[in-house]
Image (cartoon, rainbow, N blue to C red; front, side, top):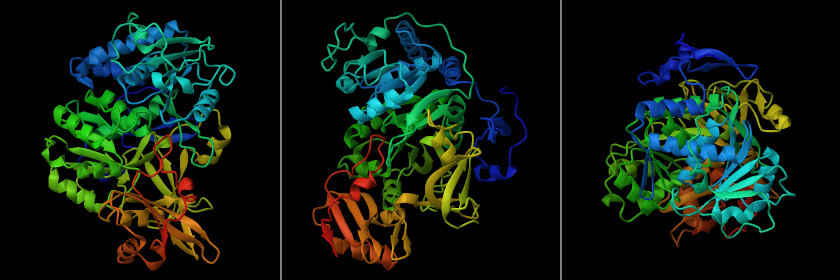
Length: 568
């Protein structure tokens, strides 16, 4: 696929919502066999080429900050090239899968970039994944090697459970570049004869000068989806997918090399990986790596380094506001606050606007299968369209389909189908799921929603989470959005509980620091804002965060089995 000069716009109608933004020209191109997609023709051909372009333009600019350590783009690329030599010494071949089972750490960034230089496939897995799930992922993708935090080594499967796994590289808690650590840390089985070494040993190798040629439709990264209803599926993110998502973020968030992006969500999740890390690689901006989100640590790092940009879930913004020292931090450079995964309460939007008038909150809706963003709220429109997730991105398309696969008119509710160059080509080693969930390049999201006449997209619920109360449809997101407006409520989740008369009743779970919240107050608050059949009839109050899976998504199936703490 050539990446020649610009050509006529793919669809002039799609340009109007993003008029005034620095969106590159687009043209239609054929990809993945049967897809004809609006694309950015001036793109580079791979993720490694994107890194090389950034080093050429911004080599001496700050690239990454982690716990007092700082690297320029030239230094970061050099260390990644050393890691590439280390991987070659371990026998890595083009196309091999390597699991990166890590927390937020510079070694993840170096390993990921090294794998792209060698034409290998990075399989990012968060540290919350437990031994059984990790073993299944390693076996399913046929991983050749794994890079993991030293304290996670004990979760690695043995040779009989993962016969293709030949080596493991551990990352110690110390700095990335330190003295050689020749002995494996505790947790490594003595009987395991596979190759093992520390990540710092890879960095002692001379920089690798070889760059493995790849095609842009080759898989660069595999991310396993949440598996909320069964085994997770490995979404294949190609170079082509990632490059388009990076350009969407750059154009629609107006990002430049002067930005400083806080990585506060897991880098192994599609948001942290694409919206933060890869977008920073694409701009030459700086990545501020936060190992674990704690409001106090976030605010300290943001103030010290002049953070300008981040993407988080709404509950994290709420926790920042609840920090007693929030207003004492210098955050005047913070201009872009992306969010997604849940509604942002209008009270949170208003409170942040009072404290940080220069901050633009932007809702971004997407999924692993869409390489992060599908829609985004244009800058300056969040408060006026707070009940939507914005509009389709310049190369994206969203249509609403009924159960028979027919498109519905504007404003009607159905399943959201998504198309564009950021939609993955399918699932790793799972042709049945690929055939079931994709139609001619349109991914069936499983989300119920609508698109109004102006193009604003509303996401109402997951198909499987919609509650049927006596024949009335209750969209959990609508109720959750109201609950999040209650003082002191940090998180909310609504599920249906069985009822022999009505089929289901509405049950609310809330995470709050209030000790006095009861079902009566919740019902009274909701009754003023919702139809009577949508008002929660049962309530479970939690003093801790609601349960989430390894990818950070709320586990509603667990909430459905939680005993009712309070009821009408």
